[in-house]
Image (cartoon, rainbow, N blue to C red; front, side, top):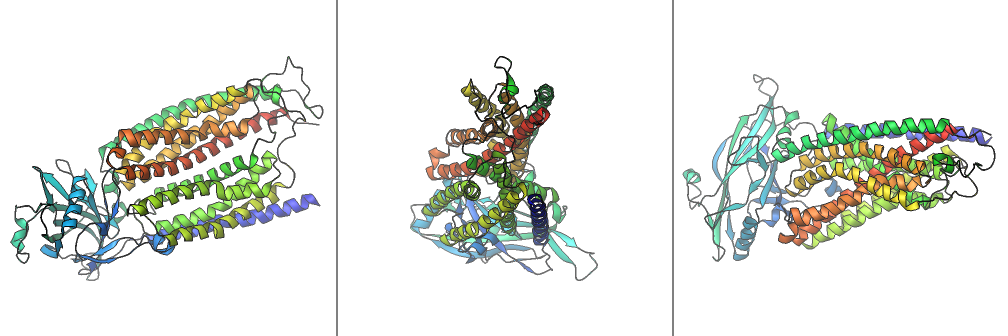
Length: 629
C-alpha cells in the first residue's frame, strides 16, 4: 500500500513540476515581445530621457541632481510596479523629430545660483558624466584620439582646461536609423540603431542666432560669482546606420580594450585550470572504481573489519552516509545554490538568444522577478531531496531555512545598501513602498512555492531516509584537521579562476559599463561552475582516502569558501587598487556591499556544485561495495 502511495505521489509531483517549464516559456515569450523594435514614422517625436550622472569611484546621482533646465517630468520608483518598470528617469524637453535634422536649437536658459555653481564645480572636478537614453539606447561619445570603436557612455558635465572650469552646454546629437520596409513605400517606418553625441562649451549671449553655436569662446565657470546665465543648446543629425536593430548593442560590447583583453585572458586561464582539474578528476574516478571493486561485502549490522587492514574508504564504509552536523543548514545552502544557478542559467539562455539587451530593458526586471519566484519550486524540491539524503528529522526547519537563510542575508545587505544610498541622496535608492513590496513577494509567493516544492520532493522520496545504512558507532577520524585544511586550500582554485573576472566586473561596475558586467559575469560563473565541480570530486576523494567521512560539509566548503576569499580580495582591491575610499568613503562602502552580495551568491553556487559532485563520487564508490544482505 505504501508503494502505491509513493508511485501516486511521484506522478502528482512530476505533473506539477512539469508546469514549471511552461511558465518559464511564457515569461520568455513575454520578454521577446517586450524587446521588439520601436517603429517611428517621419516627423514622429522621439523622447530623450535623463538617467543618471556618474563618475568612477563616486556615488551615482539622479539626473535631477544636476542643476540643469529643460526637465519636463520626473518619475520616481515609489512603488514596486514603478521599480520593475524602470520608471526612474527624467523626461527632457529635447524636440527630436524622426528624420528632421536641426541646427543650434535652444533647449532652455538656466539662471544658476551660487549653490548651483558650487554643485557644478563638484561635478566637474570629480569627472561626472551625464547619461541620456533615446529609445532605451544609452548615449555614446567617442573618446579623443581614438577610433570610433573606442567610446564611453554619456558625456562629461565639463572639463578643466588651463586651471579653468568650463561647462558643456551644447550637444551635437547623431541619431543612426534603419528603414523598415522598402524605400518606395510611403508608409515605411524607421528604427533607431545608434545614439551618439559630441559636446561643446559655448558662451552664448544671443540664443536666437544659430551662428553662435560655432563660437570658440567657452562658458567658463566662476564659483565665486553670484549668478550665471547658462544657455543650453543642441543640434540633431539623422543618418542611416549600417547595423541592424538586433545588433545595435554590439557597439556597447566593444568599447574598451581592457575588457576585450580581459575576456581573452579569462578564457585562456579558465581553459588551463579546467583542463588540469579535468585530467585529475578522471584519475580520481579510475582509482575510485578500483577501490570499490576491492571492498568487502556487508555481513551484518556493522562493517566488521580488522583494524590493521581497514584503510581508506573501507575504514569508514559504514559512516559515509551518516547524518552530518546541522543538516538543515547545509540543505538550505545547497538548495539556494541550485536556485541561484538556475537563474544564472536562464540569464545565459537570454544572452544566447539575444532576447534582452544587456542594458536597461524596461521589462527585464519583471522577467527576473518571475524567474526568481518560480525558481523557489526548484529550491524546495532540492531541499526535500538533500534533506532526505542526510536523514534529518526536522523537515519544517529545513524548508524555512531554505526560504529565508540566503535570501535573508541578501535582503539585509540590500537594505543596508539602500539605506546608505538614501541617506546620501544617491541614484538607485528605492522607497519604503518598494521594500515592502519585495517583502510581500518574499513571504506571499516565494515561501509558499518553496514549501510546495519541498512537499512534492518529500512525497517522492518517502518518509524513510534515502541514504545508506550506517554503523551504530561512528568510526574514529584520526586526523580531523587535515581534511579541513585541505578543503580550505582547495577552495583557492575556484578563487583563482574567479579573481580575474572579479577584477573586470569591478572595473566595469565602477566605470559604468553594464554590458561588460553582464557578459563577464556569465563567463566567470561558467568557469567557476566547471572548476567547482572538479574540486568537489577531488575533495571527496581526498577525504575518503584519509578515512574522513565528513564529506557533506567539507565538499561544500572546498568551493564555497571561494566566496569569502573573493570578498576579502574585493575589499583590498576597492580600498587600495581603485582607491575609492580615499576620495569618497560612501562610494567605497556602496561598492563593498555590492561585492558582498555578489560574493555570497558566488560562494553559495560554487559550494552547491562541489557538494553535488562530491555526492556523485561517494555514491559511485559506495555502490560498488554493494550493501547486500
